[in-house]
Image (tube, rainbow, N blue to C red):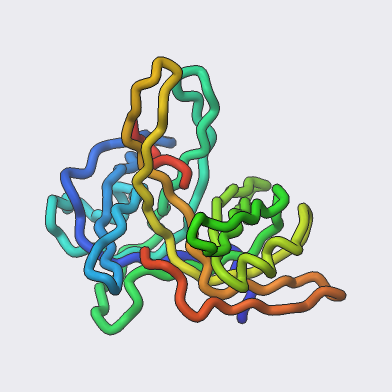
Length: 225
């Protein structure tokens, strides 16, 4: 597997109306949600950041088909007095949709910046959560939550902070409930990479773990309230 640092391909349909999220050096960036289909017939609703320059004067609307290539990126933001890690798919190119192609693909190479958290569900399913730091230009890094399953989770549980790995998978959304200090419950959406193939790049510990079937398509959406 080629050690690509951060590459993402998504194809789906626009949900709702894009909004201007921020502006940098006179260039506007839009935030939008892209519905990306799963094999199950359900869909992931994924946050996209897209420059006005890619639109070339056109404007996307609800229901439009859109395929992009780019990177998954993270941003730290203070929300209600607490730091949040926000995840977005940053579009670098708009491409022609191809129905024969997997609509949700990601490849990452980076360094583990936390020890993987291994656990089992009440039904005995093995899961490992990882936080991967992937380098970006100008000395920046993106911190990307990843989740893996089964024997790949057992493999990940043996890894430690500083291990360099490369992986392929997909970007997924997940709805969850968060209980507030006053006892009320709010609905949230989290984003993470569901890992399909995981490889350790350390010289003396070269092993591979392949997941036969990862679940279909946690960090909050950039621009979310």
